[in-house]
Amino acid sequence: MMRTALPRRLFLALLFAAGAWVGVASEVPLDENLVALFADLHVTADANNPHQRAGVAQSVRDVLACNPRPANVLFFGDLSFSHGATNDYRLLKKLVKPLEDAGIRWSACLGNHDRRAAYLSVFPERTGEPPLGPERLVTVVKTPHADFILLDSCLEGPVNGGIDEAQRAWLQATLSRYGKPVFVGAHHPIRETGVAGLMASNAVCAAYIFGHNHVWKQQKEEGVETLCLPSTGHWGDIGYVLVTLSGEGAVFTLHQRDYYAPRPAAKPEDINPAWLQRTRKNDGSQWRVPFKR
Image (cartoon, rainbow, N blue to C red; front, side, top):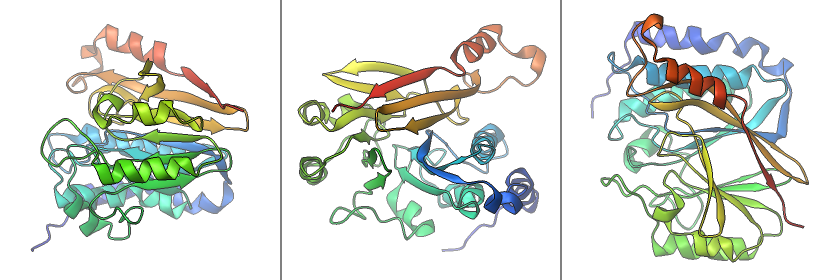
């Protein structure tokens, strides 16, 4: 297959946007008790949709500006703009390189706009937890006080998501062995993955985290606390979430930069005042999840 290189101007812009942080990577410590959450990246090199990649680049810069920095960044699906184009993942690789250069680990689950084969062609090392991957790219991210399980809810075609019986059996067996709090998540809401009953019956499960809807929202569903994440730059609530973990629980802090639908205003004077009001109201909002003893 012939590879299409990124335009030189775009490539240089990405280096300029993120590369300034590389030289100081070793000077800022990493905190294993901090985790950054991104969702709905929708990365694309399409000249008509620059706000998606600009949003990801800004979220990366925001993470690198933290002191200390989070040791982990988690991506909650829809990494690709539309249908898992290989070039979308090649661009993502360039966008996340500053995180890697700073020693920050990143992990991802896939959404309905992603495709496993294309993703693995660019990130062959990310085959998921055995014995599920590469058919289902499930990841476990460990931290001192709580772990994160990222499920693969991508059905490759439909907008809705789900998990198969092999993944469900793996999750049940994995949770039965857990002795510390764990957050379960996927790109799709809990009603689509159908894991609420399993989580509600397991005391180690702290909450369910997902993307897909591009909105900062917490609610209880079928006995499980859930958190919906903003998008890094596609539409809706725009920003990322920083999680601070301790032995007592987790604090999720929203860093919201913007709100727009379906895309940003062309000029500052065209910005909808309601968008500005929502952004100001949401930014800095916190969600606290106590850990059961």
